[in-house]
Image (tube, rainbow, N blue to C red; front, top):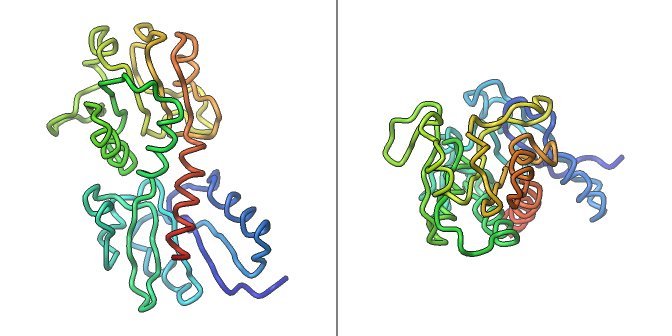
Length: 250
């Protein structure tokens, strides 16, 4: 086996299930980059970032960032791309020549392009389930597309955020796009799903789940039963991963 010359990785917590490691390992094989390696930096707390992750510089070529560190990682970076700064969440880090760290958000690219593959174009109102880093990228895209949205949270308080308890028939029928940005339903918790009144879904709804494991979450299954258009997060992940690769190599 060749000596590792370049290392890339995913920063997150409890990420053994991650898509990224297999995706990039397979990519390196297909490109015959046998001196490249992709690893999981599974940190119990973000404060360990410098100690555990940055020790791999100068071999470190770039990082992806996932739950729950997309927002907290910002404090550890030297620069932010303009889009990442506006969103205040980062999922891609480039190591600059001076070993400084620059943050980007490729979730925006991945979500927008994947959404357009299933979007009718006449959806005007959306519910975003969850308020973490990924939800900020989703909101950025919806605003760009002219779609009004509300965040739904277990702990509402900020403007533009409502509680799950407030979701009644009228709210569901008035919001024809529902996007799950929470981790509910991720393997192995296959029965978990956001607390919605699913009986009010119709075939005019689009349910998008950022989760990709399993392919069809309980949330999406409920949408499918109602005849709604459904989509999981796999295409988004593939698109954002390729955009990350472009950034690392630019």
